[in-house]
Length: 138
Ligand SMILES: CC(C)(COP(=O)(O)OP(=O)(O)OC[C@H]1O[C@@H](n2cnc3c(N)ncnc32)[C@H](O)[C@@H]1OP(=O)(O)O)[C@@H](O)C(=O)NCCC(=O)NCCS
Image 1 (cartoon, helix red, strand yellow):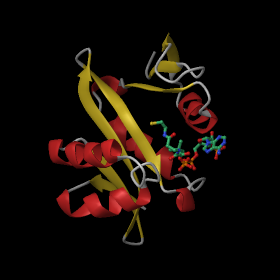
Image 2: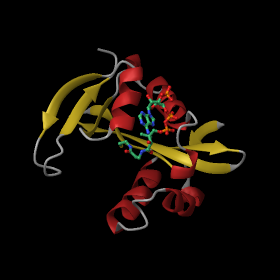
Image 3: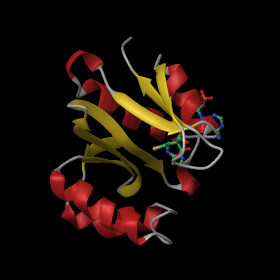
């Protein structure tokens, strides 16, 4: 497996591996914007894209992991972990902010493995499922 920057030629494959993109124009548009901005890294296994991560610098001027997505067929093989390692390695002081829904046990477990600390909560984005804010390196 290798993690590398995603480029314009990857967009169609990223759209295909992301189950949300198939039903959400917003997600499809976001993927194109993330790649265009140079914020997207892709995980590749034997030449096939299996997942991607997006880190942008616009969370109160801090770097924020906006998206971590592994294609359903490739989950539980360490790809999310590899993408997160690469994202952290790219941060000064390995400090990275992120968020996830309270209900997202896979992401919360992954963040716990890396020692992310819960820093806050935002109510009202998804009804009945608060958005939890985390920071690495605390
Ligand atoms: C969250 C996600 C990226 C994890 O990717 P993955 O490649 O399957 O994860 P890994 O194989 O690297 O697993 C790393 C750790 O994550 C946790 N984890 C992953 N999937 C899990 C699951 N289904 N249930 C519980 N914990 C899980 C575990 O702690 C796991 O470590 P372990 O295998 O030693 O138990 C993946 O489930 C995904 O793409 N989900 C949909 C998108 C999403 O919700 N992204 C997060 C918000 S942006």
